[in-house]
Structure formats: C-alpha cells, structure tokens
Length: 492
Image (cartoon, rainbow, N blue to C red; front, side, top):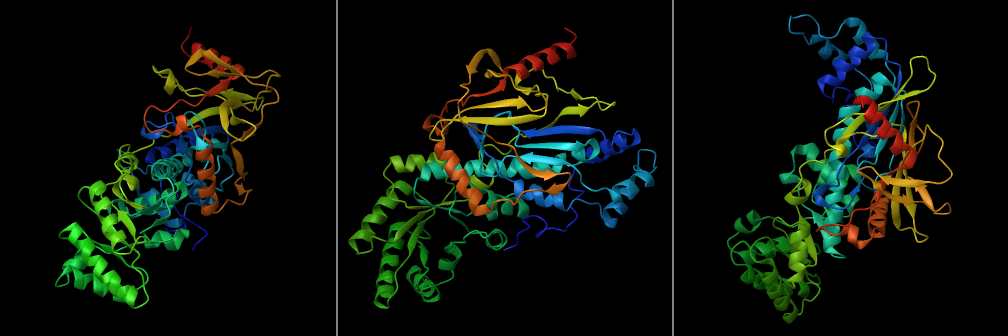
C-alpha cells in the first residue's frame, strides 16, 4: 500500500490539472505585479447533498499529496509554451514560464480533517498565501474535495440504512473512468463501507477486497450445479454463489446441494448472491431453504442498483439480506452527480500592508453571497460531544465577550452562546508556508472519525426525508460587517 494516494498513481507533476483560466489569471496577476499579494480563499459547499442534513469531508489526503508535489516540469512548461493566442502569438511569454519553473508553494492551508461532518457555507479548506498560488490551485482542490466528499456522504447514508449489515462497494465497472472508480472506492470506505471489489483500490489504499463471480461463470459450464462445484473446488473456503442466472430459487437449491458436498469435505459455503428479481421475496424464500437444509450461517448477499432508500424499503418488507453489494448508485452518487463546492476569495492584504481588504461576491440570491474574512468554524457541543450549533467567525478580528450566532439567511434567528459551552475549532493547520505541519490520519482513522461524527448527530439530522436543519450561523459582528459590505457594494 502506498502512502501517496495521488502521486503514487499518477505522474508526480499534476500542475496542469487545472482550468486554463487559472493559468491566464496567474499570468495576469504576475503581469500586474500582484503575484505575491497575500490572499485568503475558502472552499465550501452551500447545501448538503442528496437533500440531506449533512456532508462528510473527504479528499484532503489527495490535496496534501498534490500540494507537496506542486511544481511545473519541463514537459509542462513546453506544453504551455506551445499555446497560442487568437493572433498566433505565444499565450504565455517565456519570462512567465521561467517564473513558474522556479515557483515554490508557500501557502498556509487549514482544513477539516477527513471524516468531519460539515454543513453548508462552512469552509472545508482555507488557503492563505500569495495570490497567484492560492488562485492557481483552485480547480485541483475542488475536483479532489468535491467528488470524494460527495461519495463519502453517500456511503454514510447507505451505512445508516444498512445498520450493522456488511456493505460492499461493487462500483468500478460503472464508475466515471479509472480515477472516478479509485476515488469512489477510497471515499466509500471512508464513509463506512466494509470492503471493495476494486483490487487496485485495495492495493493502493489498504481497503479490504471482496467479490463473488459473474453470471458468465455459470454460463461457461454445462449446468449451474457443475459451475458451483467447480467454483467451490477453486475456492473451498471463500465461495459465494450467484444463484439467479436461470431460476433463482432453483439456484439456491443447487447451491445447497453443493454446500452439502463442501461440508462433507470440511468446508462451508460462505454465501449466495441475489442480483435480480424481487429481493425481499427471494431473500425470505432463500433464507427458509437454507435454514431448513441446515445452513443458517450462509450469508445472503444482494446487489442490483441498491441505495439507501431501497435498502430501507427492503428492510421494512422483511428482507433476509445481511450483505449489501452497492455499485452504480454509490460510485456515481445517484441522484446528485456533483457536490457544487466553490472556492471564493475572502480577503486581500492591503497594498500598503496595513491590514486586510475583505472581499465579497454578491448574488441576487443571498444564499450565494459569499462570506468575507479569514474564517474559522467553531462547533459547540453538549457535554456528551453531540453537536449543537456551528459558528463561523473572522479570525482577523477579536471576538466579543458575549457571542451570538446569527442565521445568515434570516437575521431575526439568533442564538446566544453560553460562555462555558464546550466547543472545538474545525479547521486545523495542515500547511504553513508550504510545509506540511501535521501527520495526516490513516484512511482507517478517518473512517472511524466519520462513523463517530455521523452517529453523534441527532437522528432528525441524519434522516433521509426532510431532515432537520442543523444550526449554522455567523458570529454577530461578522454578520453585521457582511451586511454593511453588501450595502456598500450595492451603493446603498
């Protein structure tokens, strides 16, 4: 297993993993002499995915690997030098390419650890440093964090529906290409699945790998019983038979017959898999056949476009399924294909270095108006560690003695904070001046964090249908300043 989740797979230089406009803006900053002006950006999403009540932060390990290896290779620069303007001139002058060649990453990065529960408008990452560099990394950070956060969140929902049952990720063949498959396997494991069928993900990330066989295995033999017998001979202690190639319940009977032969030779059948039909009815019938035959411990694995709502429904119907194989619906994040995370400039150091100019992006929709400042997220918790409310505040300004949290969409909704209320700060230092300053947790540790944090949420926030809105607001003085800035920008 490699400790480099990104560069261990791809070429060390991924500097061109960006949109062209990041590079054209970088050149513009350089041309105007603004490349080293200190800036602050925040990466966040506005609404939790899947019409749910929360998200689970993921992808930071990719971000760290990317930033540690950020440089422009000779091949990168040769390609950039080949780009042409509309009139055929070089798009980027040689002097700018020479600047990129010697550029060293010097930003500070603070982030929520992977597995942290997050809510709308809360920065998952804060980047502070030279304007050119902080701008240049936007696209790469978004693609890494957006997708893995989306998949990790979907996985926690599936885990919630499955309860203590085993959940397997079977999605590689339906994923959005090789990287989509690998990133999805990693994020799904972080979010709570128990194993993956993706062997490369198992090798790279240390995820347990599991699998059965396909219908083609059964079809390659004269009959189903012969196919099961051959598979049992190959894997006497690891056999799970796919029983729905021809007739599901007859397939179960054939599996039982072979299981008896296996038992006589000192082996036990591990399970059967149902991949089509009425899974509730077939699983109940299969369980009865297996129990009557003396095989109560044979697992019943189900697959076939499963997701959290269908799992919940099947359980309500009394399905006798103890292992869930989740493929397409998980790795493609059905039915929300993108998280919609954004990366917004929130502060610029004044030209005379006397302080900060706090910036804001306006919108006709207040929900899309950004939050100025150098933000931190403070989570207030009960004595038992249950989240109660989150407060965003500007670290560049002193906090008042009496704290009040204000809903950014409705200033009449306010919550006073008890001075003795326990809290923790969610954004933790990751890079300082471009140097990694903390040892990242392992994937298993991040997975444990996600499990712990999701379970700490009130069930009303975790429910799938019309979840309760978790309180997230701005510290009162930040909300007042934001309102004043909006009015000033609009000339009111």
